Image 1: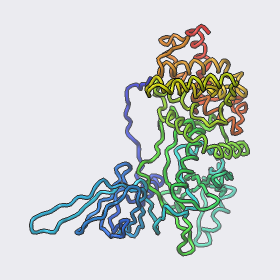
Image 2: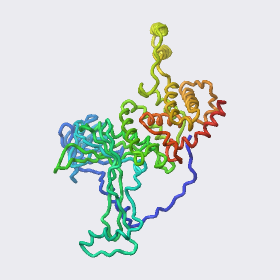
Image 3: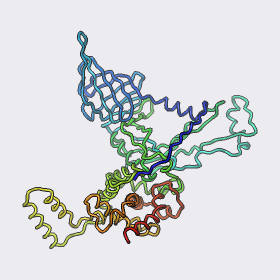
Length: 520
């Protein structure tokens, strides 16, 4: 089911020709070139003239040479030096083929296209297979909401008592008169918002303000919040990127929508002029935010974690969540894909939401039941007899079912995770186990064609609610395991600024309708 929008209304965008903030943004964009003409060195050491264009999935390095070009093997690395001075490292490259052009009485020209998955840009080349990354830094779409440090920046309402102190430094150069209505804007200078030791290194979040020196056109302070991961020891490039994606997945769950990733930089162990080198990273496949509409924009009062007012809780949850990520990574990745669908629902999303529970690690689901000796003997005897038959779908299916005896089933896994949510939020979400059970039965209908004891045509309008139920149980139980104070969050009033809050607001009405159509 897709939510539709009404008629589009176009508004003329108001602009101010000399707005200093707009001009600063434009200057910031202008500083990031996307085309690099220069000399590139192939993996075999052959130098080639080429032009690199950074354009997302269409990023491409075009090489040209008078001599035969060496093949660029898949997953190889190409170094380049642009004529404008930048050092370029093309990582995890792929080149489909090498072509040539021939004309009569003219030398043969060879050319090739190379697609890199990542490009590192800076004052030095990167050795991606070496443990040379000491930190990775990035931004995501909703950091200003997730780390709502409201008092870090501000405006002095009555600046008259302090304007003379503010102007002391400027008055040492020349006379400056204060007027009747002075304004003072400030940044407190406390740039570190959080800093949490985790199993992947220190995860920290900082303010990075930019500002103008002032003048007749005005003054501005523009802030960017940066997430940094500093491993305990330097790591290879792919390892650093994996850690970044893991933390971005955590931030997505906290925000209630998939986060886009921008402004990626790495700090390396190489030092030039006593300065550790920082390289900008341009990924060809960039994480994009799932939905940029205000309808799904998180609100600071609705998100489950508050690192400003409840810092210890945030630290505990982040550290525990990261420590479990290696075992939960695949399942959390499926949850992230569900979030990317935003308000688009259907059978595929419900099946995906249910299947997340099937790929959870063993310590996150009920323990396997030890079978009695008689049952073990019967199982083994049946399996032996089935193996006599030739391989086939029915024979293999029976053996697979016998192998799962004693293992927790999908309904049991979902019920187990729902009970974790119920232990903290049972009073607010009555009959959550019932809703989860119906959701799993709908999944079985879509997968096996078996509707069990539900009348699917009656339940079908509730598929979005049932899907949201499975996703809520998955994420909420994950946070509760990590130390989230769900009862504190539930005790506050909420609007629609998070997927948890939206689910809570619709729960009572949707539950009543589910009871009606299922006679529960």
